[in-house]
Length: 73
Image (tube, rainbow, N blue to C red; front, side, top):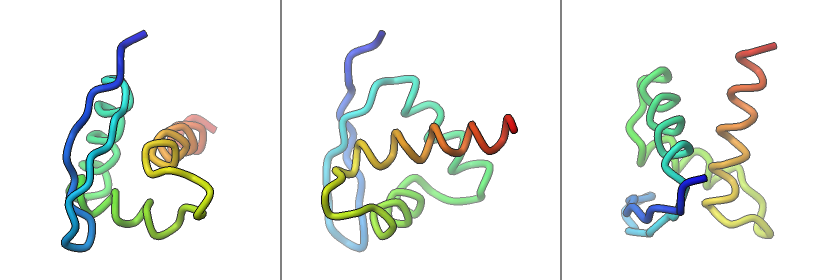
């Protein structure tokens, strides 16, 4: 398992850092490309939908997992 890697994102004009394992970054980039979105746009969408009790990194991981489950169904 890879260690988390920190990347900066800009969400609605605010910079933030997110730490994800490399396989999640790869899948996150693939999903954004498949949807015709930039990483910042997809992160903003996920950020808007997540609950206050969930961190952005966790919300991205769940989004990636759900995306692949739906695709493979």
